[in-house]
Image 1 (cartoon, one colour):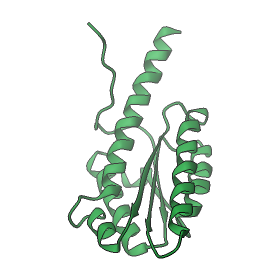
Image 2: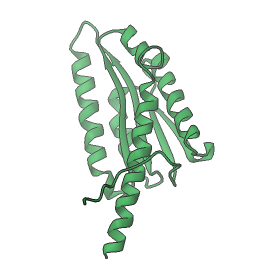
Image 3: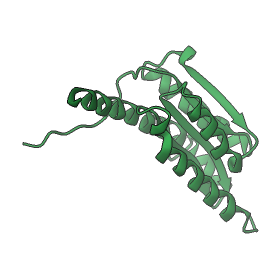
Image 4: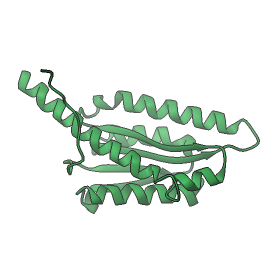
Length: 167
């Protein structure tokens, strides 16, 4: 019978960073509130949560990289909102943000094998869609990214424990 190894939502050990873009703050602050609330509801102490703010979503990957490289956190949650406008600016910002945070997430284990980086950046066509995803109709995507982070931190921790038993 195969052995299934997965994360859970039990209180993880370690500190969490929430990295939030200030641009579209009426949306991103709701995402941040959802993230903080989710961490606290899952047993993470307020003192184990730091919230970093940067000017915009384009700046998020650099912030997330620096926070991850600090080796202080087991979980890093990136939150932002890019809303399509009448120019191609949306495509550049959304694409670069996703690529940058993806690269940081891929390389996070170099800083700490249990570190998880999750993506809670909204990319919407309209303000109404963003509002819906920040807690009105479609749940709070900041909370969802945080749940994914908790689960992945616990999974990576289990994997590290399994690796230690092998050696």
